[in-house]
Image 1 (cartoon, helix red, strand yellow):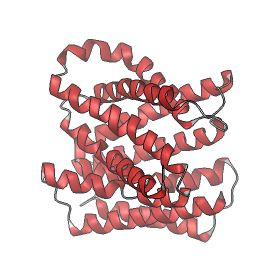
Image 2: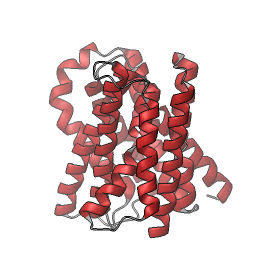
Image 3: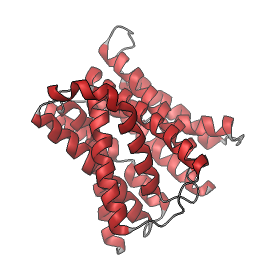
Image 4: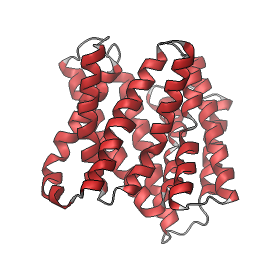
Length: 285
């Protein structure tokens, strides 16, 4: 893969990541079924990719397998809360609420790994907080916008915990192999709960869930991994910051979820914070 193709791959990956909320809204079934189906189709897609490309890392040890299963539980909980936020408040608020995860990561890294935060990192946290305040039209616990935003922020916290767990548990492992284990854990854990609901899922919903699992999970993750072999981590992180832009733009076109100027301002602050956080993370590495 040359540099141009790598750029196209990571932009396509960001677009697919951004479609997650849109497809979650298109699927007229429960967040539980969306999460189960997404994991199931992702396992198939990632297994095929791993078979075609081959593994470039070590096989997970028993301890790493346990941690990967725990990571799968966190990933599943992250998806459940995110899709619930989409159902409650729409794609834009859910996507921007989830985008708060870099702020959680910075704070938790400082607490768990005893890493000192610098003023730039405090700035990232402040920008995300201010952006979240602007994203919500008004703070009323009874309003769907506020409830959805809180679920989305919880989704961001869970994703941040997953990122930190992966940092501690996946060293030396192929990232596709790690993702395969985590998605398999989700599918196995939710199978008993999802089984009784399977007959109620329509063919169109299965189509959206299949696209979500195969393209927005399996393919997007594979494109991200492939592009990292050519591009610098800083470049890919900045491009992935466009994920909320893609998601909100497509939701605007499909569902007429027109963002207000206040929401756009809050989203711009959050996306700027993601870019700053990505650059700080690359500098540390």
